[in-house]
Image (cartoon, rainbow, N blue to C red; front, side, top):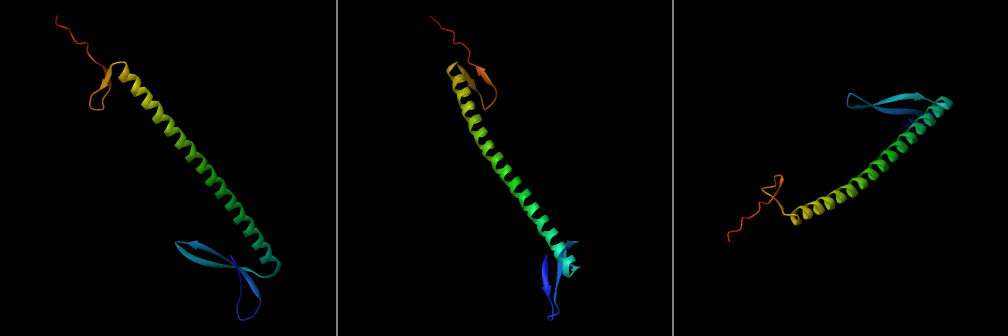
Length: 107
């Protein structure tokens, strides 16, 4: 989106857009029509930027929540593992937790 002037013949407004992967320039016009089109384009650009900022801040907030949740899950997993070990359980080759068998005493 740009105001252009060629050969000193005044200014005119153009838009650039992608068509099939190529940038194509579209002539909009001169005078008040071009000025109005420019204002509409600027307003659209500002709206897109605001939406992008909102999405980015939401994503950052979600990332922080995920980090805190991961930390909490690691802590609770460690506490659960400690409680199982203290209560006499074991884990064979990272499988399910099992209660150790009672040893028969031979007196």
